[in-house]
Image (tube, rainbow, N blue to C red; front, side, top):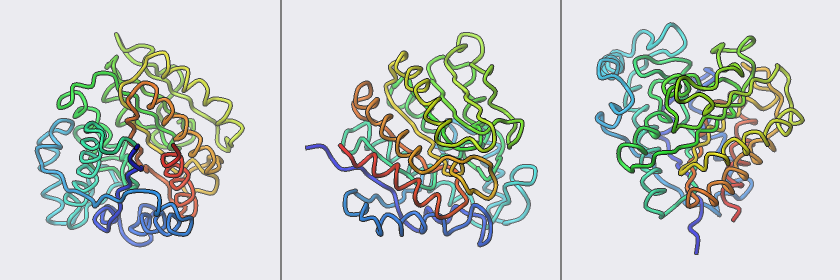
Length: 315
C-alpha cells in the first residue's frame, strides 16, 4: 500500500517570518493549515514535525563566511542580510535552519521510500545566493536539497520546477553551468518584477546549454497563459528523464497578490503538482518534494498550497 503524502507543519516553521504586517509574516503557515482543516485535507496526510538542521548541512551550498554572518546577526537581531529586503531578527538563524532541516528530513523519507510525496509549506527560499541573502530568503533550501541529492544520495539528474511569480534566480545562477540540473521556471517577466532575471534566452551556460527553460509571462498572465505554456515544461522534463523532482509552488503567481502582477488561479498550482507527481511516478520512483515558496495574499496561499497538497494525496 502506498504511504500517504507527508506535510510538515508546526510553529517552528512559522518562526521563519519577518514580523506581523510583513508580507512574509508568521501567519502564513496558519492560513494554509486552517484551510487544510476546513477542506478536510489534514485527514488524508501524514504530518511531520519540523526538524532543525545542523550548521554543517548548510555548507554544501553556502559559504562558511556567510553562515557565520547570519549567526552573528541572528544574535543581535539588527541590520539586513542583503541590501534592504531581508532584515535580521533575533533567532533568524535557527528559524532558517528549521526550514532547511525539514526539507532534508523530507529528502531522507523520499529516498528511503517511507513517503515519496512531500510538501513543506514554508520552504522554497529560491533567491538566496551562496554568499548572501536576497528577497526574504536567508538559506537556499532548494539549493541545499540539490547538492545533498548529489553528494549524499548520488542522484545525478534532478528536475527543479518553479511556478512562483518571481524568477528563482538563486537556484538558476548557482546551477547555470550544471547540465544535470533541469530547471523549468514560469514567472512574471523580469522587466516588470524583482529580481529582473529569467529571460527566455537564458537556457544554461557551456555544457549546460539547453538544460534550463525560462518562461517569462507578462503581468496579468492568467490560467489561459499557464495552460498554454505548461505542456512545454512536461515535454522538456520528459526528454531528460529526471531521477527526482522538486517543485517550488509559490502562490504569489495567483491573482490578487499584493506584490506581484500575475493572475493564475489555484487550479494552476494543482495541475502543476498533479502532472509532476505523474512524471515522478514514471521516472523517479514517485519521489517529489514540493515547497511553498512565496505568496503574500493569505487566501491565495491557503487555496493554492492546498491544491498542491490535494494533488499529492490523489493516487
